Image 1 (cartoon, helix red, strand yellow):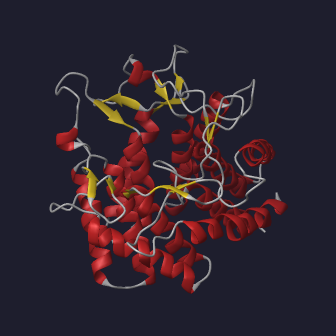
Image 2 (spheres, rainbow, N blue to C red):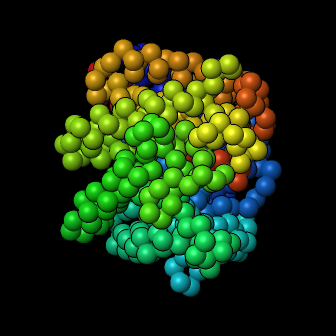
Length: 386
């Protein structure tokens, strides 16, 4: 595993980050362009808040944790100023998208814009200790917590009181977000919140009998036999397990870490496409036709988050199983998502057979986050072993 540490670090610093530095910065109106062709040309100028915030976090994280490069700080500053000026409505909710100049396009229906805004301001605050950044992070985080039971609020299309489901995505994000914001939160908030969320994930969303992590469960924590209730997202579940591993290490709880490892392997083994390789995007728990038409696509973030989870697992126990799986997922990921012609950022969307579906490096849902974060996490994790 030794050679992977330098490989991932080199890819991060020599290919991926330079791509975003060169092509994504909007020096006129602030913020970033995320809709980029393989050559780095901008094909759409709309700005999506959660991608703006993720890019702020990425450059802030590199500046704070890797090297204090002025150009990284400047990139983060360009995004944080844009978000602070244009990102929220009068109630402090973060819009989903803006036009290039910062005018609102889509209402704040998506709580993940708020989650990543809090994450961005929390990380940026480490590099510039202005209390207003900490306040925005804390206020946004508290707003997220207040919306947990009805994340979409008045934009929720569901008929009330019929099939009330809990969605896995929000507790998954909160697992990580609580740790990311620990330096700005007070008292026992992180401890209390992570205890609650870990219990929810590991004892309700995870079903020990089937070995599956469901995307949706009832408000009482039960399986619901419907399209939504049978839905599996192996990538979500695997990503959540490395968040839980981090919590387990923070709590010095080896049993929690081992359980997260075990659950991670179950989702990986279930989600791996034995015919064509790679990990399915969605699956149906009972093998029925999935609700999502894109169920058999292979997505960049699913594989990258799996590599992070496997690197962390290997760092903990140096097991041959973790090394074998890491090498297997690494080979698929680097051979299919990495662009050998243009270099820079990676592709994101493949068919089941591994053929390129969308000829883009960034768009409405893909920005400067999963690729650089995974490269950073894997290289740092493996370097720490060495």
